Length: 127
Image (cartoon, rainbow, N blue to C red):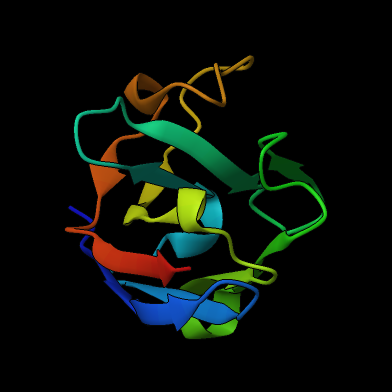
């Protein structure tokens, strides 16, 4: 069983930056692709970013492309989401998630693809 704990959320002005961290337990962190999702009140859980097991491949939602950057440090069992040029529409609870890679062609933007989830961290962007 893997446990994920997010941190780094908070209140920021539009145009500002935040860096989220997700710390994972367990011995097999490097075996998981990792994703970030977000959910605003009354809305569906939305894909934000994904990073491959080695960190060599990253994928972003169109809404955050060019502003957000996902990275990982396998030696520290941690994945990060650097968020720049934040907008009020980025306000949401942000979740990290781990994909055990049990399928060859995963649906990378689907929450169903991910096996383990953190409890989330609130990001609020004020105008």
